[in-house]
Image (cartoon, rainbow, N blue to C red; front, top):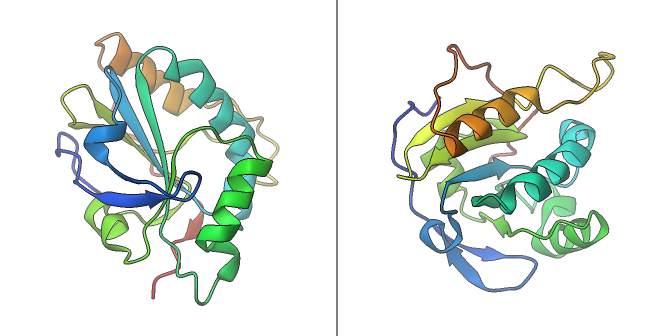
Length: 177
């Protein structure tokens, strides 16, 4: 896992919603930045998406930048390609950038392993949290709350610390080329 306090890796990727290219610096928030590695077809992403959208709506207005990135191999998984990403974002009312990491270099720079995978950076662009949304998984009966990620975001916004250890995210492996 990417060590805490690591500076956010730089990148410039195409947003499938707008077709513009953006860097981390252009999308980061005043209070911090949440970078999520997601994809269109993963059942774990589908399971958490409603809570992720609520988190984005709740915290964007408080100065949190929200960025979603898909790094899956679109040749082997065409449902994760840019055109389908745009459709997925539209259908799910994702009004934050959904970036396509065609080379997979950004996923490698973040040490991303699965979808969903969450990275929270503080206002100084240092990694503050990397881990799970909460303990809910498809089929385990635990309701979604976003508690782990929400606690981390609150700590970043209100300059508090959070308990260690942070639980790693669990989901579908990134589909490497």
